[in-house]
Amino acid sequence: MTKPLFREDAYLRRAEAEVLAHTSEGGIVLDQSIFYPTGGGQPGDNGVLHWDDESMAIATAIKVEGETIILVPAE
Image 1 (cartoon, helix red, strand yellow):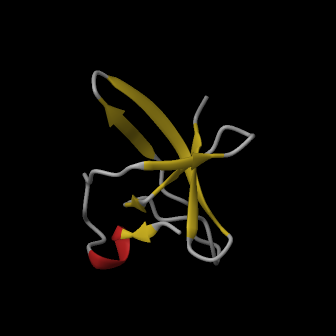
Image 2 (cartoon, rainbow, N blue to C red):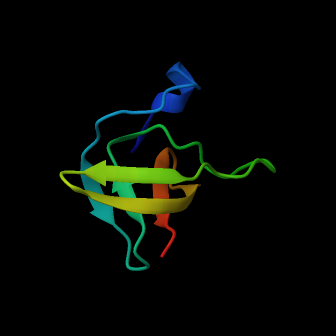
Image 3 (cartoon, rainbow, N blue to C red):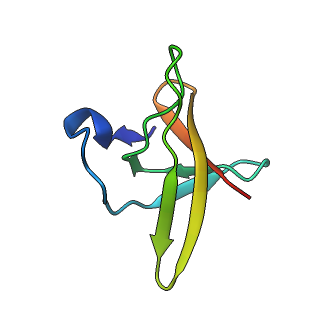
């Protein structure tokens, strides 16, 4: 389950999170997320994950299995 931080503050631009899992397709599951997932005709958010001196572009976010949000890398 991913805590949906975007519900508490739709303008939040940064938050710390822990990686809980990854999918066989390369998606990333975090314990909490500011990325709004695709749904109801609304496109999912895109952006960038940063850690240490690294970063990864996120193409979109999708919701699966209840409240789990998967972040889909751009590459």
